Image (cartoon, rainbow, N blue to C red; front, top):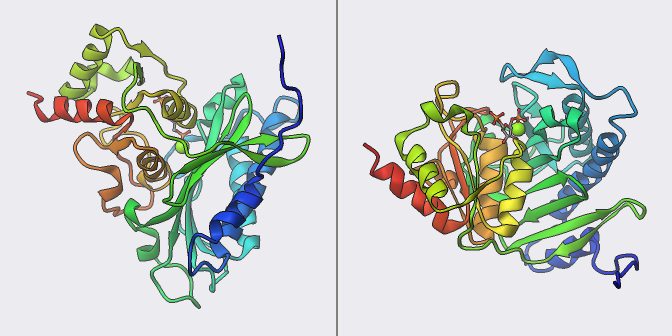
Length: 332
Ligand code: AHM
Ligand code: MG
């Protein structure tokens, strides 16, 4: 058997971002710098995650976040790392983070951008060495520069995203992002400290045979979702649920499939957060040819009213999302 053991040669993330910048006629380089800041923080967080079992950074932090969820130590570390990188980079005036109740003002009043971020998603999986991720959305501020970012700047719907992406810390670490011109994926080469373009112009299959859903709560799912899950079983689909949104989403994006987190008795508006989970993945999946819905509405069209707003999420291959919507429409 012949394996190619040569080091990856090809386009680094930095070079790719620079090259793409030229596609935007009025680009000033600020968005490019911001993407590079996120990539830098991702490398640092990746290092912390890789060493998690050796350092005393696994387990609970002993506090709850704004959602009333137990914070893990790495949640807190990742939050600090990303905020520091965005603050030092200078392009961002305000940040919404899953880990902080209020808008974080960076002090960069001239910054043109707003970032919404889940610094470490699926963090309850850290202690058992399962893939986790970072999810981010970037918006252009609406207010004039020279002052702090406003609530209105932060509460823009998903159609206003100028870029979105995620980092998956898995068997290898990848950064996947879009600026509205297709989706590209980069794999991290730790010995070189670089992300390399490994998945150019990702397109998701129109349909698939994998469904990802925590069926533990099925008794309180909407009727339409229950019917769709039965349809999946009757069709002989495979159930695959890691319980780590980025990992489930990433697999389905590449191979075809659907991820569903509906409303449940425990979480009447679903569990996932619109501003830093659903919108980013919704933008990416649409750019790859898929769809994202709350069961009846396009995710990107939902007008946010709160920073930490939750919404049901049905996301993945277009034909599968259409099917869920059809079941939900006809639900009795
Ligand atoms: P988190 O942001 O607190 O990590 O929660 C989000 C995670 C997702 O990654 C995952 O898909 C989901 O919660 C799993 O929830 P459940 O355990 O209810 O299936
Ligand atoms: Mg999360």
